[in-house]
Image (tube, rainbow, N blue to C red; front, side, top):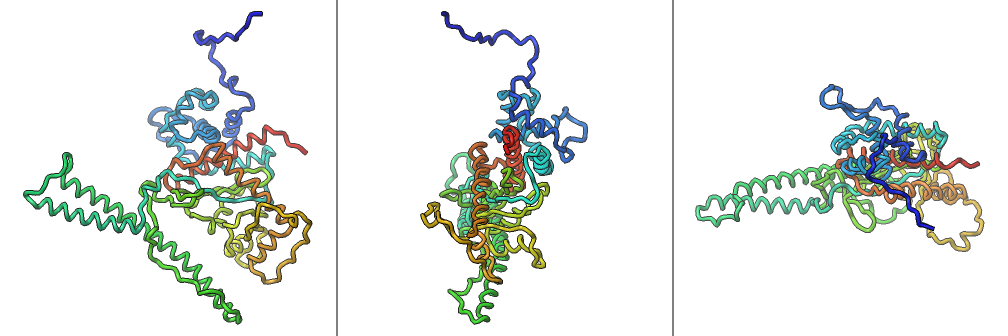
Length: 462
């Protein structure tokens, strides 16, 4: 029997224009994004209202293009522009039009309000589609370090900036003296004394600005550390008045002076040096709050803090109202502080808010011994007036607390894993806290849409 092959004909033109919807499967993410965008309210969009210039691309198309691109791991505006030619699903979203990279970047940069509102609308869409049930929810929160669009080698420390200023001042004086000498040795070809003086003066101005910014940050840090220091001093004094012997030396008062190692980055001054993995990199601290049942991100924000000690309150405040009331919060030990837990669990009058935080304070081994496998009695509740730390330790030792806290590693950590590994988003493309926050909103919005598409494709089981 003769071998037969499918006829591949690239030369015969199509007699009728193709319908791109037939080229993309019915259950494809592109169809879901188009339907979702059509359901969103786009009154917050920024468009050219002057009526001048060429015709504008519809905001629904540009928003759908951005969301689909971020959900499939295409982030740069030039790569998105190229995909409008190369990707059939993207051609469906753009209706075979091709917005240039500048149009895409401008739309993304100028529509923070639209993206923030769309984030809320997508959560409402999830509830309308019965893919999520909000109200009286349990959430898991965490932060992850994402690289800034700046190299740590473009940074200078406070001490090094001072040394460079002295060096540049000496070189300027040396160049001025050289200019006054009639028989001075000439400079290399293409270099002039006035040009070299101007270059050094510009560098001096940049270094002086860097030192001024570091000093401003040091004053803000001093104000926060001073308040914490006064609390420790007051607590130590109270123990002494009760007749208790204070343990260890007294708290050291903070200094308003900048530390020699405090740094300023010339490329993105609002980014910070943070420990990421096993090294220190120029980063932002991206925060996310995940609802444990649907695994949708219900709150997001970006912080400049290298740790999460002060992030519990502002991150919980970033939860969208559409998610409903929060009753339980699962966080790691880095978020715990007595002041923060009190602030979210109690009103200003001291009444309970109905929200309970679960944050372990003691390190536990991943290995379970034979004793851990045996059924343990419930721990004795702490006495009245116990500290927040004692109450938290008891809360995590109860069987209900252990069961609830296990949900954390199944929710927020996989969400970060999907964003970093599956989507491939490991570095911000924009610079500055405001633009970085916009980009993180776009990333989490794209994650939620992709999650909703997955939930819609999997039938609910009893």
